Image 1 (cartoon, rainbow, N blue to C red):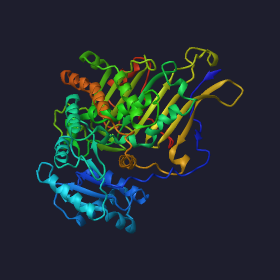
Image 2 (cartoon, rainbow, N blue to C red):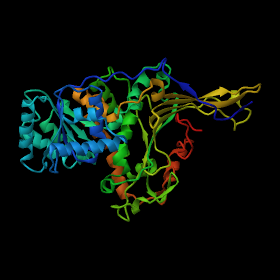
Image 3 (cartoon, rainbow, N blue to C red):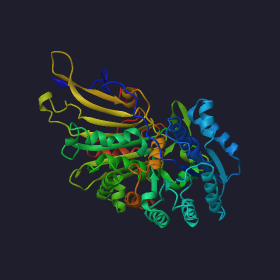
Length: 529
C-alpha cells in the first residue's frame, strides 16, 4: 500500500449546459467626464471598456463621453487618437459602423486642473451638451496621478458640479488612494468636503474580475465548502500575483511606489478580505463593505521593526531570462537609480485575530519579472491522518488544495486523493478543474467594463469605502516605515524568470508550508503538469 502523486488527465467541471453569460444591464444615462483623457489608462482600458458596453447596448441615446486633458486638440483629433488606441488595445481592426456610432458620443475639452478657468469652462461645456441632448447626470473619472486628484475635486466643488440639481453627480477615484495612512486620510478629507461618501467610487480593477466576484458565491453559496472555511480545516492560505513584465515605461512611478504599495496595499488585501470575511447580511454595498472593513481591522498589524523583519520579505529583480530572452535588471532600466532600494517583489505573512481564522497564516506575494504570469488564491486544507494509507512515516496523501484562479484561465481547481486502478491500494492526487470560458462558452466582461457600468447604475458594492482604504494603509504604512530603517537583505536581488528572492522561502517553510513553484509547467486549465 503506498501513496504517490502522478498527473492523470484532469476532471473538468462544467455548467449543466453551456449557456452564454447573463446579458449586461442598462446603464443610467450620464455624461462620463474623463480627466486625463490622453493618458495610458484611458487609451488601454477605459475607452475599450466603454466601447464594449456601447456595443452591448448598455448605453442610451443621451450617453456622452467628454475627455479633458492638458493637450490642445479638436473633437475629431481626439476621436482619431482613441480609435488608434482601440485598435492597438484589441489587436484587430474596429468595425466601421460600430465605431462611427460610438465616435459620435466622444468630445474633448482642453484644460489643465491647475488653471482656474478649467472648471468654469467645464461647467459651461456640460450645460451646452445638455442643451444638445446629452444627459444631465455627471460621472467624473479621475484618471490622473494621485497628486492631481485634490485640485480636481476642489475645482469641481467650486463651480457646483459636485451638487447637481438636474440629476446626479458621482466621482470615480483611481488608485493609489494616497501613499501612506496620513496621505490617504488627507485625500479622504478633501473628497469628503466636496462629495458625500455615497457619491464616491474608489476603483480597484481587481474587484471587477469575474473570479474575484465569484469568491463570495463559491464560499457562501455552496454547503460543500462553507463548513470547512475556517481554522478547524484550513492549514494556510497563499495569495500570489506574479508578473513576467518589468517596469516597462513606469519607472518614475515605480521608483516612488514599489510592489508593496502598488499591489499588496490594494489588490492583494482586497483578495484577502474576500477570502476571509464573514458572510454579509445581504449582497449590497453597505453589507459587503462593512464585513471587509471588519476583516481588515482584525488583521494583526506589524507595528515594530522586529515583527516586520520576521514576517515580510522584499526583493528586486536582476538580469535574467523571460520566455527564453535575456532581460535587464531593475537597476538597469531607464529612469531607475543605480542604487535603488525600491522593491519589485513583496511577500507578507498576515494573521487574522478572530474566531474563524485564529492561528491560520495568510501568505501574500506580488512581484515583477517572475517565472510565470499568475494571480490566484490557494486554500490549503489540513492533511488527514495518514496511517490508513501508508506503510511508513514517509508515505502520505497530499492535502486538499482549493485554487481560485484570477488570471490567466479564470476558474477554480480542486486537488483531492483517489485510488489508482489496480489490485494494490495506491493513491494519487487528481485535479478537478472549472473554467469560466469553457463552462459558459463566453469570455467574461472586462473588469473596467463591469465597474464602470456599476458606477453608472449607482452600485458601489465592488468599490472601496473611505474607512476601508485607511484600514488597508494601517497595515502597510508600518511595514514601509520599518523597511526604511532596515538594511537591505543580502538575498534581495533575484534573477528575472525565477520564483523571487530566496528569502521568501524562509518566510513560509518554517511551518512546513511552501509556495507554489512558479517555474513548474502548467496545463491550460491551470493545474500543474
